Length: 513
Image (tube, rainbow, N blue to C red; front, side, top):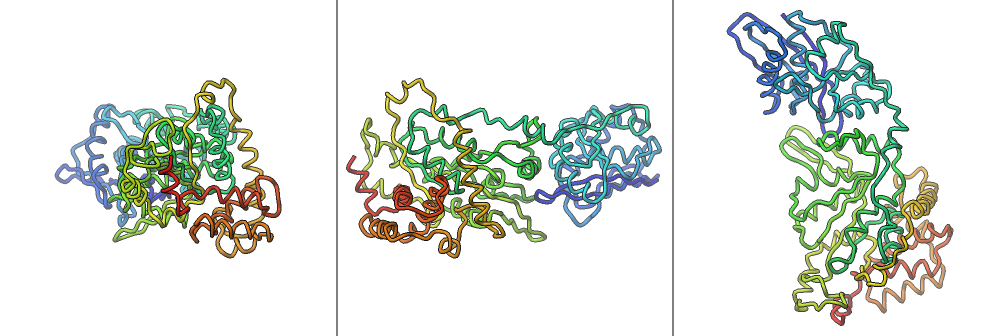
């Protein structure tokens, strides 16, 4: 007896179709799964047999051979439980399952269907290949329903699945209005109006958001660096539906998708400084997305930047440049998207109080220099804006008036982004932060006054050569926020102020506090 059922799996964040083939013979009873199954797939035989028995199906003592094709791609996860169980029942003539259904789902021992990873990617790929009907777990209904042209059925148990295919149980396909569902979940829960004071830092974050610039905040503990960083996604342009689906695929594959079934707001990821290479970039025996990919289309926040391992920080350079992460293994290379804004925060010294007028710093100058030397030069090269975050004064804390709301700042950011979209139309870049030397030369022309100002800054303030291009990019963004076609001296002057760590006298100036 032989049966075939369609299922699916993922490679990276892309789905592919898997044919689950079942062969039953009268040889010595047994259960074997072939087709490069890993641990969780091999263990599915125990879950499947228990689910079949506890669902009331009598399974004869036969030799079960399950093949997962294509057989040369390694399979992982528990999403093959349901198709294997239904395939066995189809081979035993309990039920007829049409060939145009694709089935995924994990089974509990009592036959209930549980959430599976990567369903959105699987359904998206299958629809492109002409498959329209799907059986998925109820918990995955919303994410699967985001795919246009897919008819999603969500039985709650193995028994209900069998009754559905027999025509004894009616299930209506899941209806998801993609646009309204997406808009309904666009709520961050935090707002810039909640931040007291720190107007200069808010301004720097607005510029960073407008131009897609990476930013480093330097300030004592309690000055609000983390609070500000968490609110940065609220002033970034609203996610488009395509961006949301792309981001949702990554979170679905990683098993981090929430009950809403969609990532409708820009992600904010904040890994601990003890994170490993694989945790940050992605990887493992069966490569999974890391923090940089989970932050795709959003913000990656590295708090206490000098505490991160320098080797871990160095691996950020490639995704920051390319917007993707490629993980190579012996048999395959997997690419994960990783286009994010980097926001980093650090104390000015090991104790944190070097620039705090209310606390005394206990660090020796050599300790401060050693602390700052932990920051990778190549990484610092890729951070356009450095901003000092002062302690919040009591007068600002007691002020009951709310600050400017996120939606008002976001409107200005979106206007600046539209200017950049028009400017870079037909090119591979989208924001000012991504400009290369060619674009800088074309779009960042300075008048004589601005050139003299920048030259004076380079010479008198000891700014490094690497700061030159960064200043021009940031000045271009400041001009875009003002709707100015040309970069003016005040734009250059403000951009220069955002290069704190490039000043040769930074340590000595800080030690004078």
